[in-house]
Length: 532
Ligand code: GLN
Image 1: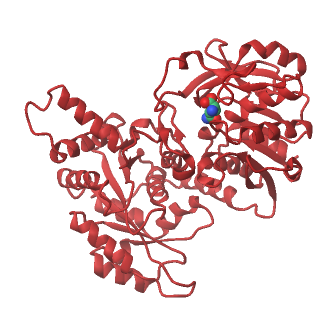
Image 2: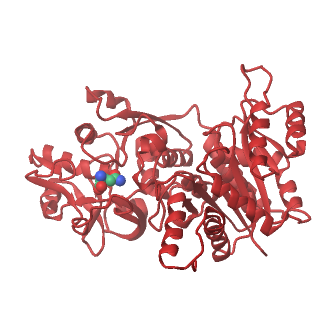
C-alpha cells in the first residue's frame, strides 16, 4: 500500500498541544495495527536543536542515531514506544543546506534556484523518502509554528503540493486551534478558530479535521458554529479538552469517531479490530493516572529549572517508574545556584541531578551530590550528575580539595573529569558532542548488573567530558566503584557506592529510553529505592 499522510498544522497560538495531537493520531493508527511514524518540521534556522537553550525551547531530545532533536520527537517515541530516527526532524537549515549544496555542485543545470520549486521539492522529497524507506502505512507530519508565520510558509506550501500530488485519498490535514472561554462557565469562543482556518485556506489548505483545544468539552453548538465557518463537518470538529494525562487524548479522539472518519476519508471501508492492543494501552494509561494518594517526593536539582520542559524526558521517566510500582512521583525542581541550606533536601525520598553544561550552578550540584551521599538519600546522577558526583566524592572522601572538571575550571590540579581526547581538536559547537547510542559493558557482581540484569546495554549519549581513568584506583579504594564502561574500556559509564542505600551515576542519558509501561531500568531502581 502507498503511504497515507496526515499533516498537522497549528493555529491561533503556540503551546496548544500539536505534538500531543500528532502523537495521539499516530497512536490510534498504531493501535489499529498500522505501521506508522511521525515527523516534526521545525521552521527555524538552527540546523538542529543541539545549540538551543533548553530554558527557552525545552529539552534537546537525543535519538538512537545521535540526532539532537526537538522535544516533540520524544513525545512520539513515548506514545508509539518506537525509536524515531533523526531524519524525522526537518528544519529550514537542513533543507536550505541541501539546496545550496546542490546548486554549488551545478545540479540544477543553470536554472534559477527558487523557493518554489527547489526548496519545496527538497521538503517533499525528504517526507516521501521517509515514507518509502520505512515502508509506512501512515506518516503523520507535524509542522511547527503557527499558520501565518513567515518561516513556515515554504513548508505549508510543500504540504499543500503533496495533497495535490497524492490526491484527496492520500493526504489529510488536521488543524489544531483554540476555543477559549473567558471564565469556566462562559461561552466557548469560535472566532480565533474561524480566523485561523481562514489564514490556512488563504494559502490553499482546507483542513479535514479541526482539533480544538478547550478547557471543558466542546459543546455541540460550538462544533456546529465552527463547522459552518470552516467547511469542516461538525463530526470532524474534535474537542481536545483538558485531560488528567496526555495519554488520555487518543481515547478522547477515538470516542469522537476520528478513526472511522480517517479510514473513510482515506477510502477504506472500516478499521481493523485490534482490541488486544487497546487493552495493553489502557492498562498503561490507567497505571499512569491513579496514584494521587500515594506520592513520592523527588528533588530534581539542576540548572535549567525555570522551565520544567528542559527536563521533559526525565520528568516522564520518573513518572513511568512510579506508575510501575503504583506511586505518583511529585517532582520539585530546585535551582542548584540558589540552595543556601542543603538540609532542605532531607525531606525528599530521592535526589536526581539531570544533565547540564558549564560553570554556573555546578558548585550547588557538587554539594547536592555530597549531601545525598552523606545522608544516605537515594541519588541518581545523569551525565553532568554523574560527573559532579565523582567530583564531590574526590573532594570530600579522597580529600582532593581542588578536584574538578576542566569544563568548570580549565587549569584545575585534579581534573577528575576531562575533555574526551577526540574533542580536543573540535571547535564547532553544533552536532559535535559524543552523541547517540553506544554499547556499554556492565561488570558482574555490581548494582548496575543487578539493575539491568545484563552485561551489555545500549544507551544514548550527549557529552564532551568524561571520567579521567587515572583516578579510578583511588576511587575504588575509597568505596566508589565504576561498574560499566564503553569503547573497549576507554570510557566510564556508571558509578556506584555499594555501601549506600542507592547511589548511582550514569554518563549516558537513560531518560531517552523510558516509555510509559516500560520504565528505564535505572529510573525504576531509583524510584523503588526512594519508595522504601
Ligand atoms: N557538560 C557535560 C559534558 O559535556 C555533561 C553533559 C550533559 O550533562 N549532557 O560532558
